[in-house]
Length: 322
Image 1 (cartoon, rainbow, N blue to C red):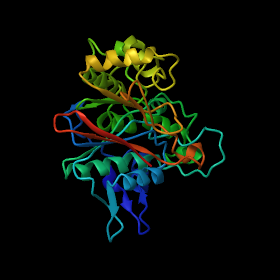
Image 2 (tube, rainbow, N blue to C red):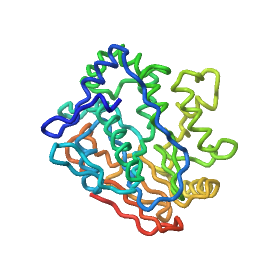
Image 3 (cartoon, rainbow, N blue to C red):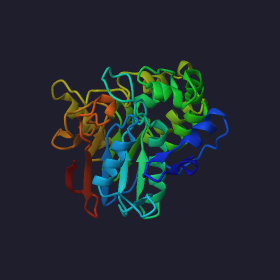
């Protein structure tokens, strides 16, 4: 789909042609090769919730030395073999009750990330985007946090609802181009946080496939209580705030159980907004949602997390990039 987007002379990324094709139901849905588990890599950049703010996304990619602009105004990948993981909530620019210009660029954000993945793969890197609770809210027809521009970009509320409904064009796009959970070496990445009860009979590949099946309209919440918990439950890895806003210290015990089951040493989450990227549980838990989108106002600066690993997969260094 990103092939229908264009770089304009001022360096902006426009996807008007994609929007037209979506409105006319004339779009081919790409199917990317996404795995649930990847081996350890040298460098990982973790990015928190974006909420339709393409400007902030590009800022992060530049600050993390992932891209630079060429003479023609296109963005080139300079991140070598870096893996990027964005932990979900790429949509929903509105509904926060703040006074801000409607700069919603939801589709541009989605497709910019896909284009960057293509460029990264040419250098043995990846840009992996996860699903967040806001993507699922749209699939369920909950548009409370969609801006007016976000509604109009897709041809009105009913058209947006049809596109995002299970087996709709955008739901299928999410099914084939987004994961719910990914593990890279010793690190687990997920939107809200993965509690130990989800790891056992269900490994993360099965959990990813369960969500994918729902997006494709092949399974329904009414017929599958486990799926209903995943999509709407308080303990869901999309919705939980036990790690993001913990009460007491029991969350660290739960984290330890989850990581042990997955042979992992660290988890990175979004969903729960922090004043700055922060760590918990002896640096085994990192929270990267800093509310950087202008949907929350203009005062928050973007941040991302850089994880450097040794050749044996052990962590070498962790740094916050601002």
